[in-house]
Amino acid sequence: MLALRLTRGSHPAVQLRRLLVAVASAGTGFLLLCTLGYAMSHPDSAAAAALRLAWCATPLAATVYFAVAVARTDPATKPRPGLSAIGLGPGRLMAISATTTALACTLGSMLALLFFLHLRGDLTGMPFDGAAAEFLASDTPLPLPAALTLLAIVPVTASVAVAFTLRPKDTSPKSTPRSYGRFGAYGKSGTRETFGAYGRFGAHLRTGGRTAAVEDAPTPAPDTEPTTPDPDPTRPPAPREVPKGLPWGVAVLAAGLAVEAYANRAADTDGLSMPGGHVGGPAGVLAGWVLTALGLALAGPGLTHLCGRLLQAVRPGALRLLAGRVLMEEATRIGRPLGVVCAVASGAYAMTALYDTDAAVGPLTTLGTLLVTGCTVATLLTAAVEARQARADTTAALVRLGAPATVLRSAAALRAGALLALFVPLTVVIAELAALPLAHR
Image (cartoon, rainbow, N blue to C red; front, side):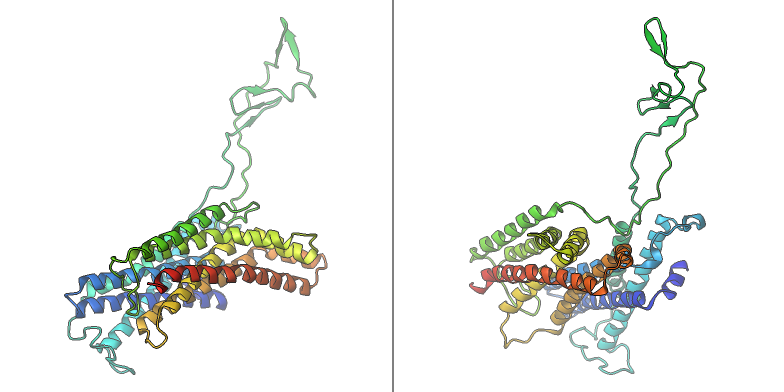
């Protein structure tokens, strides 16, 4: 009930992001139901139906990734002072965020079911009644348990991913409690440290050539150090060093290109059916594409950090220094979604190069492509909003110091231009290399 109240009282921009999550969930649920309809209309083609279900994993991953990004930027579930006193600690806020995500995805799944039944002809009174009755096996009763199981995949996966991402993290330093006494302190090893007795109180007694502390001092009561409040678990600290994923990303990217080149040489391997009816090469080429996309996602933070360093090279002014430092601070938050967008763009470019321009692309392929592209772009924009919220205090401090608004806008434009100058040519090169094995079969 609390999650529903927070959802109703949110800002319109937050409501719009949740509505986009519901739309993405509806599209993914409709693709899963269409896979069920194909299996019902083609009972002898179990392998083809399983392959269609496997292709739905990409829109599912994009939808879950977008749902997690929206949950991270939700201001209603961010820890604030005083909420723990009324029972809304980090764990409870994480549960509320997961419940809100499940509600949005469930709404989308229900819309997908209604549209699916409408296209089958089970529901009437709207345009395009039964437009896909033959494709969706309208003459066969719909197995409701199977349909509900497929529709539950998106809400369950998204809510679990949100709960795992926003789980409370113990970021306080774990140290052994130290006890402070009247004349000294007990250290981590349990021995008494008499640093206070040597100076102020002069309790430096020598007995038999040995130094002894004051024996009549009262035994100190155990007292722990004051703990600092945990930082916001939904806002990871921006790294001040080079992200460690760049070498791994380059290695995985090179491995993916090598796998594609090696799989292309196997001429006797059967082709793998891709969405839209295109038969493209062996399954090893698809594995190479997956490794290439993973490499771009891993290398994204490191490349963003590199952009920030290049902007500050060769005697930078205030504008380049500000833009470069922001890119370095936001490398992980912005770089990973940007790498995923580049991976999706390179895959879409490679698929476009493989398809014949006169061939018609199916509606389900178009829907899946729009879902993946839209979710990744929306995730990048949501990450930009999160980064803007994270540096709101810094921006306010610059304004108080007299920085004009034109400088801040110019720094934002410079950051965007630097990222485009690096990632656009890289995406085109990776797309050309990814499409090369299949284009010359």
